Amino acid sequence: MKNTYRFFVPPASISGASVQIEDREILHQWISVLRLRPGQQIALLDGSGRGYSVELATLDKRAATGRVLSEYAAQGEPGFAVVLYVALTRGERFEWVLQKGTELGATRFVPIIAERSQAEASANKRDRWLRIIREAAEQSGRGVLPELEQPLPFSMALGRHPQGIFLSEGPTAVAFKRALAAQPADPIALWSGPEGGWSASETQAAGQAGLIVASLGTRILRAETAPIAALAALMFARDEWILPDL
Image 1 (cartoon, rainbow, N blue to C red):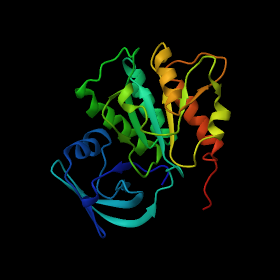
Image 2: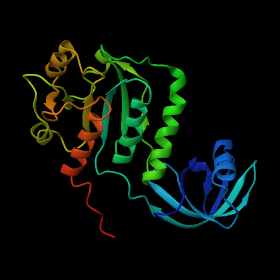
Image 3: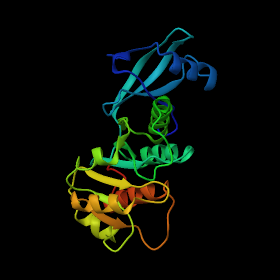
C-alpha cells in the first residue's frame, strides 16, 4: 500500500464491505485535485488504526461508493505516546512543526502561549492546522490522527505531565540523552520553546514542576528545528526506525 493514496474518513463511511463517502472536501480532492476514477484502488483509514483497501465504484460531486477488498492494521503508529508541548511561533514555522511532528510519530500537540511567543492564538488557524496534520498523517502512513489541543498559557499547561523533557539552555540543563534515559516508557512529553527560547522564570518553573531541563547540544537550533530534532532522536533511541516483522 506504499504507493496508494491514503485518506482518513469517518468510521461510519465504512460498513462491512461497502463504502460511501459524502464529505465535500474529500470528494473535491478526489475529483478536482487527484482526478480519481471508478475502478481505482485507494486506502481508507478509519482513525482507529485500521486501514482498508478499497476499489471505487462510483464517484461524483455528491457521493462516492466503493467496496472493501481487504482490511489491515496500519503500521505507522509508534509503540508509545508522544505529546509535543510546542510554543507558538510565527507564520509557517509552527505549521512546519505540526507537519513534520506528525510524520515522525507525535500523537498529540499542545500549542503553548509562552512569555516570548510572537504569534497569537487565533481560532481561525485551527482548521488549517488540523488539515496540515491530516494530510501529513495520510502521506506518512499513520493509522491514527494526532490530537491537536487548544492553545494554553504556559502556567496552565505546566504540571499536566509529572515527567517530561523541557528543551532549554542554561546551567541546569543536562544532555538530552541523559534526560531521555530517565523518561517513562509511555507517554513521553517534550517541551520546546518559541523564538528567543523560554524565559528564565519559565525554565525555573519547569524544573520545579518535575520536568528535566535538557539541551540538544552546543549548536543553537531554531524554534521549529528543536522539537523535530528531539522527536527524531527519541524515535531512534526507542527503536522506532526498525521495520516491523512482516
